Image 1 (cartoon, rainbow, N blue to C red):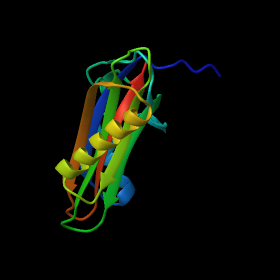
Image 2 (image 1 turned 120 degrees about the horizontal axis):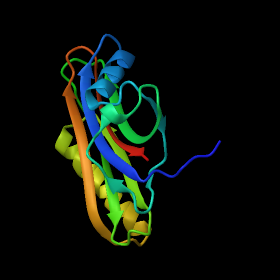
Image 3 (image 1 turned 90 degrees about the vertical axis):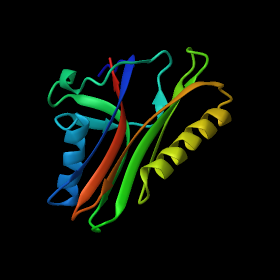
Amino acid sequence: MIVRTPTKFFLVSGSSDGFSLLNAFDGALLASGVGDTNLVRMSSILPPGCTEIKPRPTALPQGALVPVAYASITSDVPGEVISAAVAIGIPEDASLAGLIMEYSARADEAAVRSQVIKMAEKGMEVRKRPIREIMSISSTFRVESVGAAFAGVVLWD
């Protein structure tokens, strides 16, 4: 099998309630626009030179194997606030890889987003890569009976 390195990426997020934890997660995927694909969870490296495109979930073929770094959380505790977020550290030098961090918690969206951005900054610092930009997306949900929050970085060619 030949695997090509992705050249494009986009950020997605969504939240949902559901009949079960898995149904809520599925609903969050649908809300984010990637619910009819087969997500292949990957570790957290953005390939060098990868460029952002507008979210194009409709361009993803149904059933496609789609590489994604994501954070998700589910809960069946009514009233609980759950949040998921991802952040990308994009280096000044486009010939170097960027870094994607994922985080989710039983906390408000601002706290989760702040934490994941700090994680991306620290990860780039460890790599000694000056940051050109930090990008982030998040999702939050107040659970009614069963809920899910999802945020991801989709890599595509």
